[in-house]
Image (tube, rainbow, N blue to C red; front, top):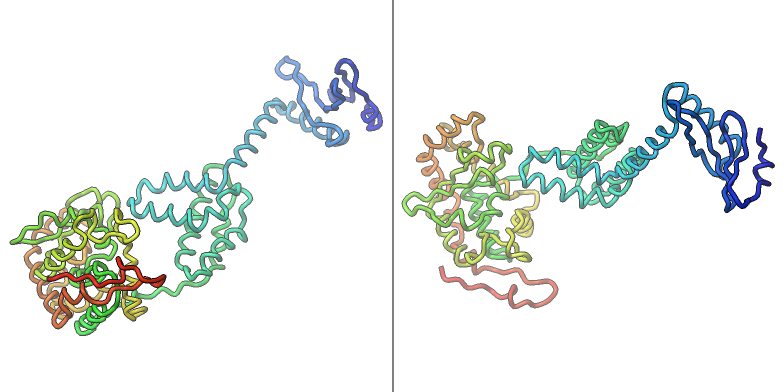
Length: 432
């Protein structure tokens, strides 16, 4: 049997040589003087050698233990060399299985049934809020405190609901990793009860005609971009979703019938399940009263040269964010009183109170689409005339006494806080 002293005193020679121990273990001394523990064995009638480790990093005692483990593998019918290669592959795979890699795999799979807008939002917010912190870590080293720390950063900026959504997404990524054999637990599930409680209530909305009229008057006198003001006025009388209006391309208003002006919003832009977004039976029809057509005509003069009705001020080739309307209402002193989406609640409350017999038609005007495909097509055709009547009635109600379009466009324009900017601070005179 070898001793540690014998190994330590072994010197390099002109040729490599071996110092034998027991049961196939030996030290291989190279010409450069390196000393390597190796184990010689036979597997399926062939002589093979397993490299165990380097001396002195590995002691003689540790080398003997490794040899004994290899002998146990042999007794079970497995090749120790093949097993070592497999373990290296697994270790390398674990190191490459970072959270970012697993997140992308999960996203590519899950997003196949999502609407493009939702998919883009999920990946954009993951890249913004989560991946910068844990994306580069192997998924096996991420524990509950680490996940909670990431979510706390989101909570600290007041985005409590966003933190909860990210917890759900992180959990889904871990579940995917577990199912593919690259994780054994879901730390995001553990932290659920540790998050800040979410007190979720209804979105604030004004529900009387008088209140909506006052809101539009306040919008008129609040400094801001003319096309955002007009967007709010149009939103007030059409009750479409804010995001749908903000993303409107001019192509949807290019060929409106003068005698029967109906805005057809493609199903692809509506809030629908993915399979319905590809079915034109779920296109949403919005009858446009004369007041809406006047707003559109004015918008055409302001932004009609671009692709979108409401362009982004920094990136004109893209639509403005729906948040622009919300920020404007905040500046008009309607914070926690009314939000852009609240115009839908306003329309529903006001019209259902006056015309309870038309509740089903009002739901259709809000794009509350029936689940049945045939019923959706039938209702669209059957109620369009009544929807036109109700759209006109509502526009007349909420716009009575509201400032004119000329006042909306030529009212105060927001001044750049960084200093005078003629392109922004001057008033835009438009003769209506």
